[in-house]
Image (cartoon, rainbow, N blue to C red; front, side, top):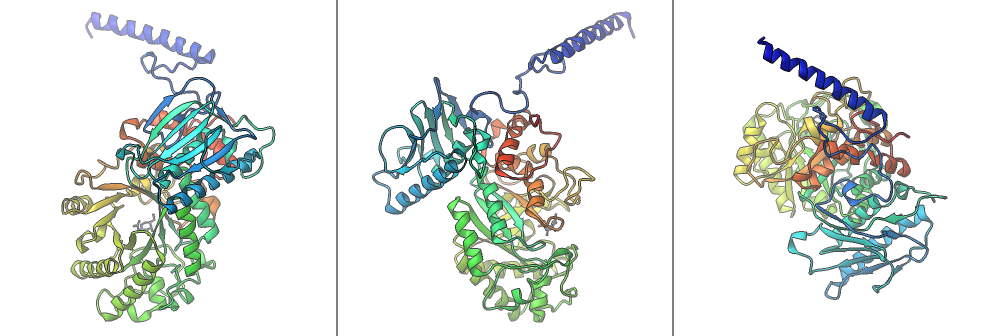
Length: 556
Ligand code: IFG
């Protein structure tokens, strides 16, 4: 190497030695100025854990569209704080009732930990928390957007719809100390103070969901409500219930009593299964609706149907049924007979009942992993079931394999075998996509190999991987065809709410932020620092979570 270059390399080595010493000194003196690889000062991420003082709105998850810090003292909840619900003069009566119920639910959530009276009063001025519909807000606010201002006199949340007010109340909870999530009174607790701020916020995508597989392992309505609580914290707005599979049929269909009498008895591993009566399912729907989540029920057809075949053996014309109950976790072996009057009479009974019980617009017909049916027969089966769903007044949704059957809302999961070409063509024909890429959003994937729970067929997914992708561009599709994101939680290996929690938290907030926050705000370094503050909130709420090393949790 010519001397000059060598001399240069000596100088670089000396400089880097000096820098290393500086870095060590900085670290030693506890200086938090983050230094980049070449020693330059980079935008430092606040040290792990919550900075001192009330949480500022730029720290919450999902991060809002716009945050303008205020000046002066924030607002402190006291015994004199009143919560006022105003629907606005021109609001219809129904909305006034909704706004009041949102105020009541907020009051309940805040009374529990603070012990403050927090009465809900009629509209009026004065100290406190005000919720009000405001049709004068810009159209761009949309149905879920809201405006939140806080100053010394109180907190005001306005929105164009009750749903937007509800999303705003979730932000308010996140601006209060972590102990606000406690389900019991916090004595000697912190000051319940909200920092002064103006937040203007609205979601990037209209569809932000999570799926719970209640077929592999059954979860009671109470356990599903707990799942809904976690989704609502992060402004998700769809709950997809995977109700049927090879191991269990979980929804009562009165016209087909064998589906639950026979098909619900068991689950993976052979432990007792269970099912939802119509009343159970409607209670889940009600609970979800109160939190502005739309329930999307899935009846997986024609595959993943061994439980249906056990109950309706006349539909097993391909001889695909396995001995019942089936308690294993293989996939792709079962299919309903894809042709003939009997199967479409069956699907009509199921679709009709599910549509009757479901106020939301979507019925998911599955369509994944059908290995024993010729492509043309499969496409025709999907097309006919799709027609039955439309005839029942609903919009059919299917896993991306259903594209050839003319399904208009495709849930993308399977990037293998060149599926994305088929998907792009479908979107160019007008189909829309819910992004659930298995390698990024399948929360039943292990965090890392060797992790005790979950599967690895789609790879491992740590928090950074769950966060570091863009739903608009991961798979080439028509611009604007992506409705949003959904995080499926399959339960072959999960059979308790505690195990669900460990897979959900902390990856669910990562996917929730992808669905809600502006693309420009996407930054793993900043997100992980904000996410670290959620740990104390989950502990206060009694939620389990995985303290993953890729998140800088504050010392306990
Ligand atoms: N793929 C199957 C699921 C489940 C999953 C587990 C889809 C659409 C693997 N189908 O994902 O039933 O077994 O990770």
